[in-house]
Length: 113
Image (cartoon, rainbow, N blue to C red; front, side, top):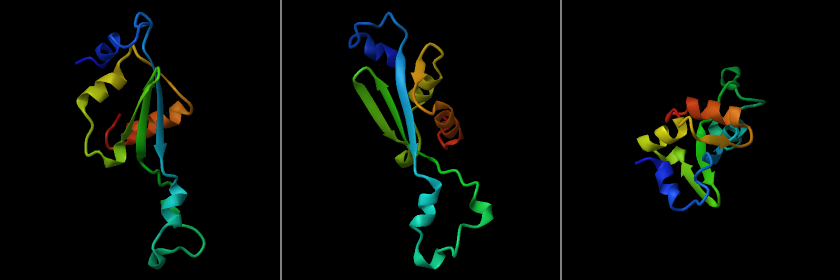
């Protein structure tokens, strides 16, 4: 089912293009080192090979009007195909802050959003 159809009866302004607020959250790379077990502490800093570590996306937030959904991607083995279709819909406008970084992280995630 087309996710926009679900909004037809709930949104009186459906004649306008659908605008979706989007955001992605992830745990900063330094956090992984800050909470290491004692036997793996680094004397000064993590090894150079780990400097390019890019943590995965933990959550995806989508908002339309006053309705929101937070998807905990870090707890999902897979995401429904309808989410892929919705995100790839060329008629939907996605807005947010730092979206280029969010988009890159989502594309690189195991869910390839």
